[in-house]
Length: 78
Figure 1: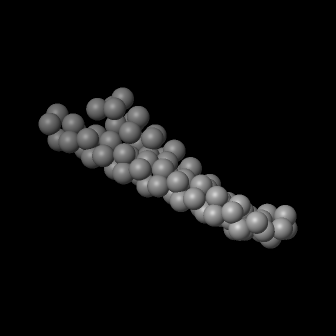
Figure 2: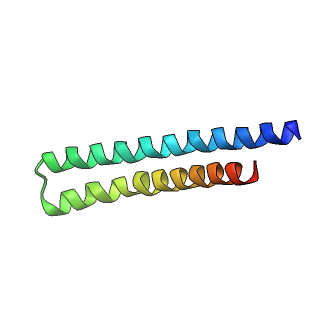
Figure 3: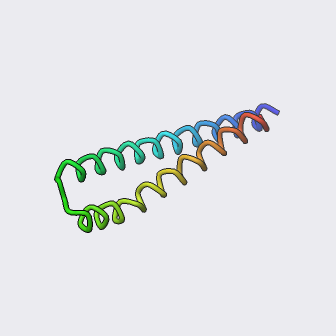
């Protein structure tokens, strides 16, 4: 039983790391959007810039959600 506890602890730790990386990506997205808004771009240019940033946003949320699922699984099963 000792080894299974260690495996679940590793799952929890890996999930926490993934969640932290996702949150860092979300913060980067927010910073880039604010910088784009400060540039006073026209509507089309701003939409293009935000469109280019959407993969960062969606990827960050995906990584964060997977990390949170790993943490929950590790806690419930451990």
